[in-house]
Image (cartoon, rainbow, N blue to C red):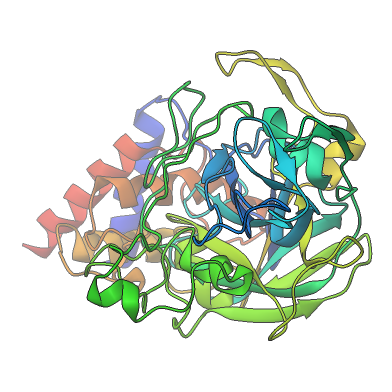
Length: 450
């Protein structure tokens, strides 16, 4: 009976000339994704920042009774990896603070900046070349971020950066001591993002769940951070709002346990079992993070990355807490509409974020029985379960959508040639193997069963 079925398959193949679907397969157990390498162009990342002037409005003559200013330039974002460095940490900005009307004083400062990062790798799973098969068993997933100097006070603030001297309350000229770019170290936390992030090049302001795509755009949109109504129950239960240590957690995207955020508004979850927190030093090199427990997020809506300062410690002109990383499109040049003007250099590309996925074993899409070839036996499984729902890889669901259908037949057809290349002499179907002829073969199988 098996020989008769094989003969029918052979007749169908030899009687039709149809375009071949080709999907490459690599026997390597490690697959690497990096923007601009091996044709991969599907990474997105962005920075979220805010600044805090601790005693906004104060001068030598006046000590205002109000919290510091959280809106110096903040809650802005540079979207879609269009900036060369993404800061993650708590940084010292300047020794001065704002009084208002482009006037600054020593009493109003110091000012700090807090930076966070989102990143995701799209189209990691699939049946195409250099993709991970939906049915593959992942042994480890590692996110590699290249540590470099932070942006420093001037570049971090963009157009809001202060010069070497500023105007004081009495019109005098004041020397502005500001943070210069430097290497940093700190504890980095990586957590699942609970909301999708919209990336782009529009000129609009950043809003909840959306980042603008142009570095010059800034906004005071505060996402879901605590705003609290003065005098309200939530506001009264919080620590003082002019505490720089408090500002690093109460502002910015909101965590799962934020007391002043309504249910469903949380934007990341630091309690997730896959969340990681790891201390990294200040060396210029790739830093590795084990994101195995976050693989569904880093390949989906993304992960949120923040820094954790030591208890009671604040950054200074000499010491910051965190790291700064190369972005996914470092070195590329774009016009105002987001069109690529020029590509990055090889050196630039080499330092972009990397996602390394290690498989438990060699996996070939379409190989149900795991014998290293896609042949009649695998086709028979698909035929026997064709039309099934709630299906698994063992049933022939190679696309991971829960059904065995024409798309799964396409996976078998696309990898039939790869099976022949593996050198297995039992392969019965010669080139070209295609979706259409395999569909006809399945019909033969189902008719024979009936």
